Amino acid sequence: MRRARVRRVRRRRVTAAREAAARNALPSSARPANARYSVQLSALNTMRQAEQFAQRYRAQGIDARVDGTVAPFRVRTGYFATRAQANARLAELKAKGYDGFVAELTP
Image 1 (tube, one colour):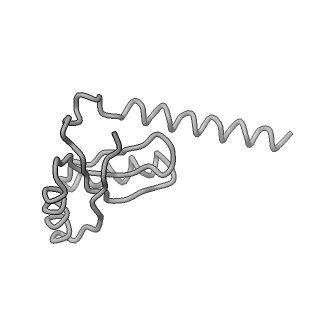
Image 2 (image 1 turned 90 degrees about the vertical axis):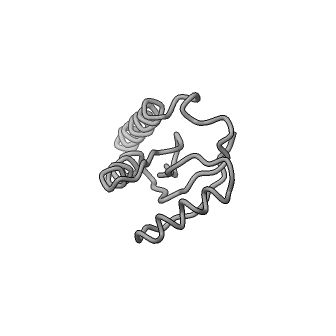
Image 3 (image 1 turned 180 degrees about the vertical axis):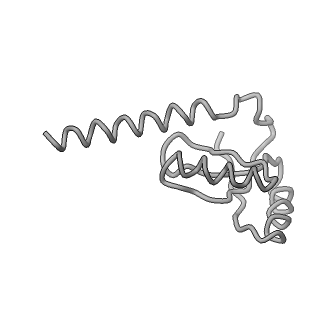
């Protein structure tokens, strides 16, 4: 009985996280057609944690978003057509003390 309740609670949390990701996802028109790269700042196990991190980055002036509908939820910034543009943004962020890497976006 307890296991069934735990499964239902977990299922609700996963469903809630997926629904939140869908609500917070950028419309396809918001992502430029030529965007191939982004700077990933972190990856977290829960949507809630990822949203909290993204909010902290936004409060510090970084245009952060959460990508993904299942764990890991990736906190990223920017859409770039070339890896060189993404590396330039990463260098700016590292100069300010942030860590991350360039991630290739999936179609």
